[in-house]
Every structure is written in C-alpha cells, then in structure tokens.
Picture: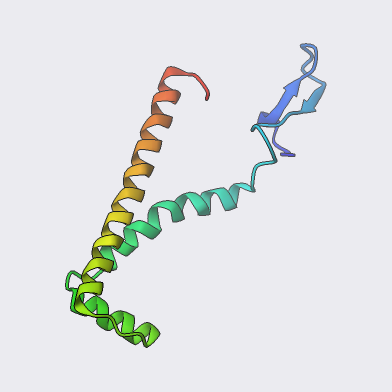
Length: 112
C-alpha cells in the first residue's frame, strides 16, 4: 500500500481516522520511480530506433553483420528496415492516441 495521504480514504467523515485504499483495480501499483522509467522508455525506445535506423538498407545489413556476425541480403535488409519503421511509427501512434484519450478524460473530470 502507498504511504501517501492522497491514497487514503476518510472513515465516516472524520478527518482523523483514515483507512488505506487501493488506487487501482487489481494488484498494487508499481513504485513511482519504476512507472516513470517505463513511461519514458515507452516513448524513448521506438523514437531512438527511428532516429538511429539507417536510411540505406546496405548500411543496415552492415550494422547487423557487425553486431551479430549474420549477413543479410539486400532484399531482407530492405524488408527489415521497412518492418522496423512500421512498428516504431505504430507504437508511437498508439502512445499519442492513448495520451490524447487520457487528456480527454482529465478534461471531462471523469475516470475510466
């Protein structure tokens, strides 16, 4: 349970007596630091892959060969590059939509 007073529920209208309440449905929440790190990683990983992904399929094949020792043909490198771009753009689009929906709920003052 959280030791924060914002997570406690007042008992029978009294300001002095508090009972700890759960803030989510299901299990306990992960620690705040862990949630923040995961939130940053959700955005950072696909963004970093898009930034660092070479535009040239031959360069991608060379990077894979240097990192793993496995050689890729030009057609496989081209397909792999396109797959990585599609996956990263899809992941970032999902995060944007999720953030937008959360902002709508906050603006309405409702919870999910």
